[in-house]
Length: 241
Image (cartoon, rainbow, N blue to C red; front, side, top):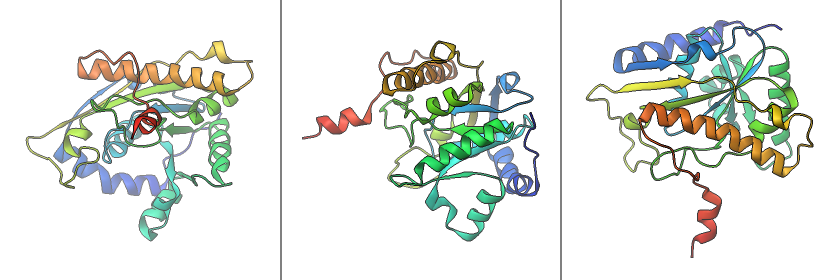
């Protein structure tokens, strides 16, 4: 299987983004050996800051296996940003439309072509009060079971200390100099789900297995034990009076 070359647009993005990341932040990177050297694979990443896609992308860029993100379609509209996103092969997601399934087909095609596709299974910034991963959406499990590609869990911490999620003031907290921590773990074992009908229950169980691996890695980074039950924003909405 081929692997995606680091082409012009990815190198341009790195030239723009890497210098400030290197200067402004310290790094604690672990588990690069778990990123496959060849073949298609999936990464499942927690999301706790608008800055953390850069932190994670920097980590994986340095492994030589660049990720293709599933990104919200509106991000492709600004001319320069859209050009970089398209040039680097990012995959637009049109939520709540008939085109939403195209993102999953594009992800499957990319993985089958030997590339990496990065999923943020939570679908948005975590709303967990302690910033643990929330209940994940099932798209990552659906693609994983369709391709049987390795699913590499990735946890990160530190970007949220620089740019907290949902902060009322959009300010960077650059001092003291923060450490961006990223760790990749071994592939999640989803073999128990292979051969089963990909119904709602199977997809939910597979997603929970993936999110448990991500939460465990984040617990290692934080030196804490993840909660036994993940935050579910749908339940919170249901409890709103």
